[in-house]
Image 1 (cartoon, rainbow, N blue to C red):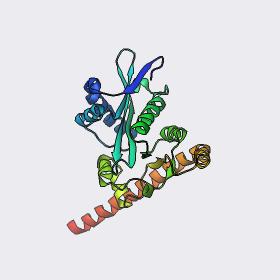
Image 2 (cartoon, rainbow, N blue to C red; image 1 turned 60 degrees about the vertical axis):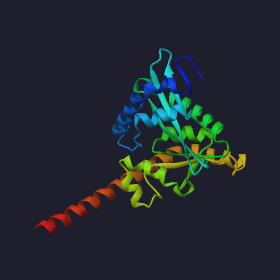
Image 3 (cartoon, one colour; image 1 turned 30 degrees about the vertical axis):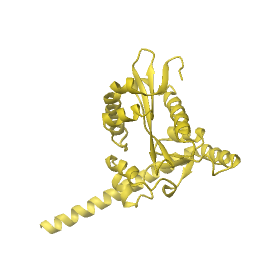
Image 4 (cartoon, rainbow, N blue to C red; image 1 turned 135 degrees about the horizontal axis):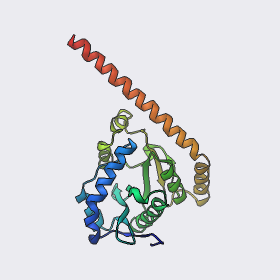
Length: 231
């Protein structure tokens, strides 16, 4: 699609030269937020582009503006729209929402029977997901594919995830199911979530504070044990 400012389309071979810029911005963004994001190499991003499993946004002058890619798990039963990133100069203008819509459409086209899921700490992404038909679920409703969870290893919160046996972390899990719920049920779940979005945001902040305090307490306990051993 296109609008007055951007061209948003499925990425391909001709976009591979943007890969290093994209991965560098992903890492900078994660560091700035203090939250995790699975690190991906430029070659990984290029592969997604060549497979037609990514969406890229460009300004009219060809400047890179945003990106998101598709990952499939459990032999295509689960799909994740991952790595959503917008260049700093193009943030707060609705571009993230447009990219999410396009990558969601692409996911439905390539994997029409798949459940589409996501993990996020951001209220803005939660709201966009809700508009697309996602609703909050427990981690047990997501893929059990170890390869997916390995992608969390580079996240700063990975230790928290593993301490909870992959059943909880700072991220909120959201899921889109194409067939299992009736439209009326889906509509009610989305409406309830949007109504309580601010509550979810507060809960995420509380959860973050709780988990980080637990991690700090654990670290302090380990340091005290080390001091006793060395004394």
